[in-house]
Image 1 (tube, one colour):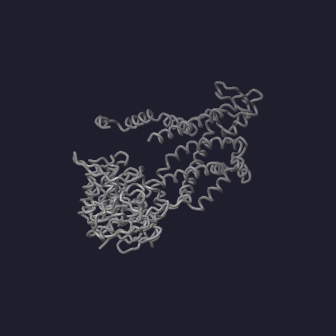
Image 2 (cartoon, chains in turn blue, red):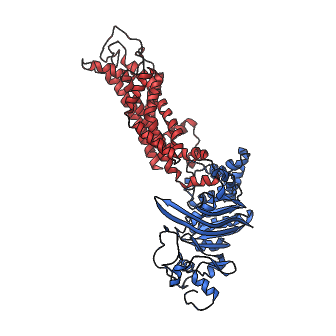
Image 3 (cartoon, chains in turn purple, green):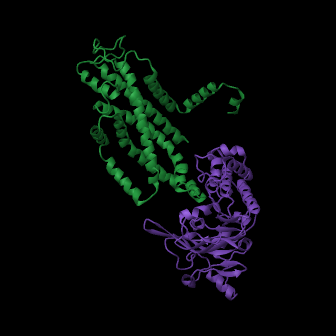
Length: 327
Length: 286
């Protein structure tokens, strides 16, 4: 049973007459209690996808279903009661906290909005319990966000997100601005909370190592399109799409002396001002052939639940002959 | 902090310590507030040597002396008593006008920070309104509606309300882009909650600066209107009307009638500007 289902989601921003095709035909489903990672470089549309899943942006086309409710059909007002069940933690911990509110008031706000029947004392009690749950103390409630460390600020962001006991939390790069040691502890916290409460996560990230630690499944995005998705272990150990391979090979290894084959991509990520009409990696791909430019991007199954959007992989799958390029 | 807590102190001493520490960081704020408080308290509480509204026909146009330290004017009023007493109407009026302008600025400026055709249209209308010389407009309004003290209040609001609206709107537009606003919306906060709980507290800093500048401006507007004979009935002392009366006597050599209310205006404005400057620095520092 999936808690969230995105089907063929497209989103086009219009900025000063120019179009930005941020998300192109993305389908993604998140099961209850599952963590789905969305990986991509900046500009891959992964954060836009997160905002679409949250109902903060209505996609240009496509369907967003949360627990059987079509979010794209809801007005902002109709969306509001659902927000207690669908939460978010942002990348920048400090910027996502109102600098004028005390920590206790920040964490209490979702309760004020969604549980107005609670008395002040009951609310306070819940806030303190939540502070302690995320590894802070009651004493932090009276501080201002700027007097806390980045890790503590992010714990407050997490506390605010889960105090209404949501079923799905979108984690938009929640650890990428934190120190490595702090990062590990915040990830542990997120994992423990998931285990306790059965929360589902969409974990948006550009960091493969973090994704490997926390997610069950992973979707790799490039230029607004999912190019590969599947179980995390499968995708990270056996990446099939040339973009995923390039991303993997660009990640530094901590194993001393380990040599990796570096898969180079030519050039830079292009401007997403046009809807891609051919393979999104066309022009940068190391295994590109002429036929690629007329190929319509689609995901094809290569292993159990492992899907790849590459013409060469798809052909290889149909007729397993040596093509030389893929691994 | 911790070592200060170790030594028990009387509450009064603690307050003094706090003020001294604050003065070290922000001398402008403390000096500005101190001078303003002094002017206000003096105008209401100071024992006056003469009744400010009862002239003494036997001592007219006296230069400053031991009896009349600021001298007397053509009607035999004691200038010192009147300069001090004028603060009773001028300063509260300036503060009230500023407060009214601030409230209007918040109530109009915050909703206008929602981007829409309507809000853009309103801002253009405000541009047109502000392109009038507003002091002339307020003089016209006050003189048409009558010589009433509350009309001076309206004049201050007409001049300063649009400034507050503009300032608060532009600040709010910038804050609306902040991540914590998106977080509040994602939490399920209604637009009104976003506006008053999340945006408003973050525009207060710039509002405080603007408030002290506006109060200074209001002192001048009041003085200007009073100088033109608008807003007060003759025996009541105001700095503006005193300067006007005194100005007629300068050519005949009685400089003291106009100079003392002028000095009072100067002190009030200087202290308000010091306050504005101090707040500005604090805001930029944090």
